[in-house]
Length: 319
Image (cartoon, rainbow, N blue to C red; front, side, top):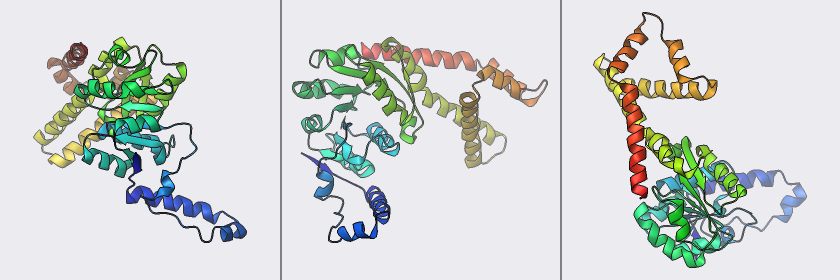
């Protein structure tokens, strides 16, 4: 059985929307509503079946699952009652429900009964057990979208019934704030419509790109691990600012905003990063002095090696 857990904030938004809608009714229509009451968050009104084509169930309700669910609701793809989730950790279930307004299920079987799109969001070591549990209940109506790191399509498909529709995804942590970069690869039985749906869902939390599965290790090394490289660079910029006399909090804000602005320039102008770099670099100026030091420290080669090392590690983990 799945039950609704809705935070006060989510429920307040629902009530406000209902109140606005009622004000648009004619006086006669409002009189006909007299005697009807809005039920409180846990009550049965949200447990009634809601006409909707898309129902999404999360097998695992951690931070990434929560971020995805919030993105789906925020962009209007689904409403909270169309979301379902289960997790072995009671605290994770409670937090997911409070953050999203989803229905919380007692077990994975209830999620499969309620939802047609399943998001596999457990730790890699938990995947085999979860797949064994859901295999008998997995039907042609189900689409499995896996965000479990290092679990290949072949492994997922082998553990499910023949012709199971599966899509493998490599998200990254900025999805937690709607600024993610995800690569996804459809399995052998996944349809073009499945791929379009996955792209729409992932786009709710940032950029989503379709790649071949063989490229997902490269995606892991670049955008999957890349936020950590970015944090290190921001920290290094901040350290430099502190070394030059700036307070730490100010140095960190300036560093983070500088990196954010540079990223937006690349994305929004469409210009090559090298051309944008040249536009900042005046002959004999301050910037070229700094770039010279970065080149002496082999920054570009070091970053390239980091991406390649992380991608290779991803390949080894996938076996």
